[in-house]
Length: 244
Image (cartoon, rainbow, N blue to C red; front, side, top):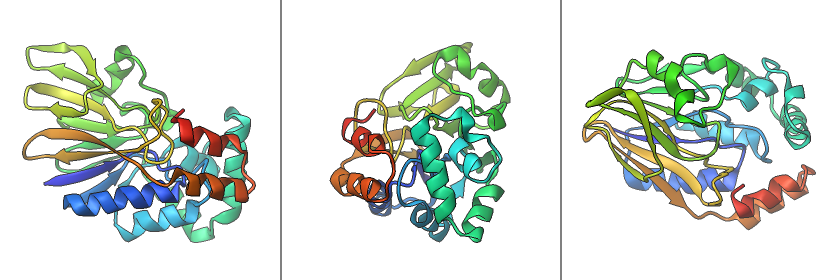
């Protein structure tokens, strides 16, 4: 079975449509999304619609939770708070209910999914160092868990010959045959922050036990223009060109 694993979308419709086109060409069986469908970008309702149309398996991100009132956005920076207000004003009751119903974690036959950490997903903590993944490895019940939140693709792994030591890699292709567990951050569809402005997603082949991080160009100019015309903070448009 082949899965398309989509990172944080953040209401970036141009990036999402480009990724979905690539997903269709790859012939995947199921789409999984690691949270933050909304936030920052100008097209929250349209991005929710795309996920619902594709019957994607989606978990809840911190921006999703902030827009439904489950998380206090006062912890966000000014631009992120402005995006929360914008998003709330543009989502209808059904969209807000859909966001509210999203689980904090989910699983398929072959993988687990969370936004931040697997052991305490409702806290939306970041996995940025190998030791940050310890709790998630303890909670892992599948060979691999896919996550997002940092917007930076990186994989933490525990190998069969050293099951208690965590290693990490920025490699775009992973072979999971010799791992006892892996935490794979697939980056971000709509707001990459690894100095690469291209949209990111991952192709997971459960039978071959491989993961490939894919990057592709999309029309950033179009998306930035949408953000500015929507009256959102200009920094949210400018950063798309830089991947920061």
